[in-house]
Amino acid sequence: MHQGRILFSQLLDYLPRHDFNRCVERYRGNHRVRRLSCFDQFIAMAFAQLTSRESLRDIEACLAAMRPKLYHAGIRGRVRRNTLAVANEKRDWRIWADMAMVLIAKARALYVNEDFGVELAQTAYAFDSTTISLCLAIFPWAKFRKAKAAVKLHTLLDLRGNIPSFIYITEGKLHDVNALDHLPLEPGSFYIMDRSYIDFRRLHRFLGCGAFFIVRAKRTLDFRRRDSRPVDKTTGLRSDQTIVLRGVKSKKDYPDPLRRVAFYDAETKKRFVFLTNDFVLPALVIAQLYKRRWQIELFFKWIKQHLRIKVFFGTSENAVRTQVWIAVCVYVLVAIVRKTLRLDKSLYEILQVLSISLFENSPILQALLGSHDQIETTASCNQLELFES
Image 1 (cartoon, rainbow, N blue to C red):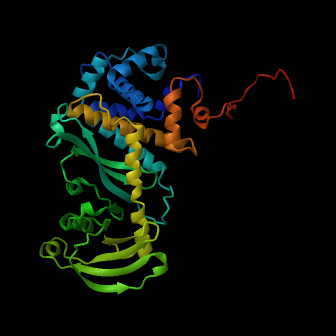
Image 2 (cartoon, one colour):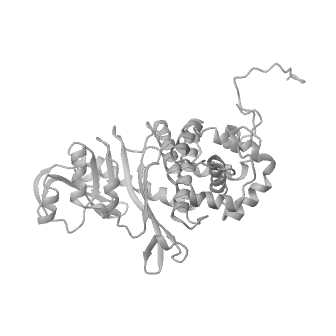
Image 3 (cartoon, rainbow, N blue to C red):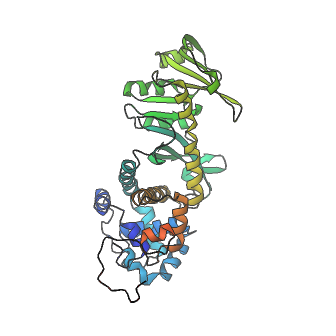
C-alpha cells in the first residue's frame, strides 16, 4: 500500500531485503562499518543509475538537496563522495554480483511464459559480448591495446523477457571464445552465438551437457555432407544437411555429426549458414532462432544509452565491477516492477518516468501509468461525498 511514501521507497520494496542481507553477510560487507552501510551504498548507486548522475560529486550534491526525503528512501545519514568512493573500491564486488543473480532468478520466473516470437518449449539464450572503452592512463589494469583500455561484458541473455542470466566481466583483450569455458550450460536449452564463438572443442562440451547450440558457420568450413533433407525454398531456406567435419583438428575436436542449415534473408539480401547439434527442430525454426540473436545487440545498445556503465565513479577494478553489477541489479529490478505491475510500457519509458519522479509522493502504479486518476484499491472508504452527482 502507498501510505504516503516516496516513489523511490516503493521501488525498493521489490528488492528482497532478506536475500540482500545474506549477500552482504556472505562477504562481510558491513564489517566495522560506521557510516554508509551496504544498503546505503546500493541506494546511492541505484539513484545514480536511475537519474544518470555524472560523478560522485554529482551524487553527493543531488542527494544533499533531497536530504529531508532520504530517510524515507532508507538512507539514515548524509552520503559523502569520499565515503562512497571508498565503499566502491573496498567492498567486495561479489556482493552485488550475488544480489544480481537473486534478482535475475526472480525476474526469469516472472517472464518464463513471455513470448519472444518463436514457438519453442525450451529456454533460448543469446550469448555475446560488448566492449566498454576506458582510458589506459586511469585504468591501467584493463589494458586492451597499446594506447587503450577496456573491459568486456560477456552476457548470456534469456530471450524471454531479455533478462541477462549470466555476466562475465573480463579485460578487453580476452577473446570472446574463451568465455565459453565459464558459460553455465542447462540441459535442453538453446544457446545462440555468432561465428566468433566457433571452437569445436568447446562446442563439443554442449553435446556432453545435453545442451544445444546454434552458431553461424565460417566460410572456410571444411566438411563432408552425409545426408540432406528437403526444404521449402519459398521460406528462404536453401538446404538442411547432416555433415561431418573433415579438418584434421576440427574432426578431432568434434567427431560427431553436425546439422548445417543454409538460409537466404530476402530483407537484407544475405545468405546465412548455421551449425547446430539439434536434429529435431524444423530448419526454419533454427533460422528464426538465430534471427532473435539480434536482441542481445539491442540489449547492449540499450544499457549503454540508459545506464551508467560508460562513465565510472571509481578507477579500481573492484569499483568498476561494483558499478556494472549494480547497474544490472537496477535493470532487472525495473524489469521485475514492470512485470509485477503488468505495465505495457517499455523499460525505457519506465526509466524515464523514474528519472524525474523518484522523490515524488505518489503511488508507484499511478506514476508509472502516467495517470492522475485515482487508482482503485481494495481498501474500504467511509468518507461521504460532499456533492452527489
